[in-house]
Image 1: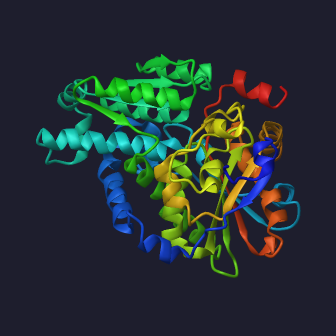
Image 2 (image 1 turned 60 degrees about the vertical axis):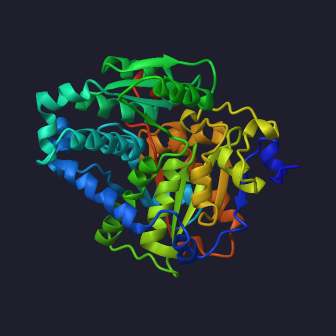
Length: 414
């Protein structure tokens, strides 16, 4: 019998506190990945920055650096999120340049990693900005990038691949929204639709990639490159907190609320944040009540894959970016002893915060991102031993900036 909370099996909102969390230095010292790996990823981002500034006009002001602002919530919105006084910040990846979602950090990075491998094998010795030239585009056009996705990762991989000239094939699960498929097709991506869930789409993408030459499969379930792309965001956040004169230490912890699907994005962020802030940062994952794949995996204590279907849940949720039945075993292993816990939220809670975040903060977020707001009060209520007012509560919004009006307005009752 899998030992998970009864409320989780019943599809009710709940808070799971991680019983096996250990001190960050101890866990990171035993990790298969290290800070050197993150630094190498940062160096790759820097090598590609001049090229990104050429390919995407919106990045010219930052010299090709992809990042989002750290927004301070005003007192009224912060009070609503916390249920009392305190400090709330929003890491606005819902409006991240190029893709309008957090997957730009991982999906774009992995395509750049692959482009670098192809280009170096072909003799690249110059500034990476030359890769915008026609000869390199012709070379990349003989290669294909394949990925399985519920939507946002597929778009991030697709837009970067097509910008460089790669062919791109995105396998989309039944949870993927029509508008996300349409925007991929508009940039020349081949979209393969599946009646099955995310896991089925990834399996089909993997099979497709294996059957063709000069092809790279972006494996959302186990990619180290995706993971490290996300991890680099920790340094950006550190600089922003310093600029805002916000202290992060044992007396003033940073509590980060991270929406979680398969686990690569919140896992990579947790890995980076723990390296930068140690145990002064507390990472809390947030999942839908009907698709809490990471909670089911971690609380089961199993090293084999455990699905939400195994405990009677449906994996059906309006939080489409989080509609994943089985967590990444790689990500689960990396965060098992690092995260504080997991909060599950209902679709009704997520939708309420889509509306409140728009009306009170003027931010357009999708339900998957609004789940972070819904998790704060339950987490604080379950952890009364700390003073919520002494912490900085950081909501990492993951997507929504590119939601078209015809999709967004019905979410807020418009």
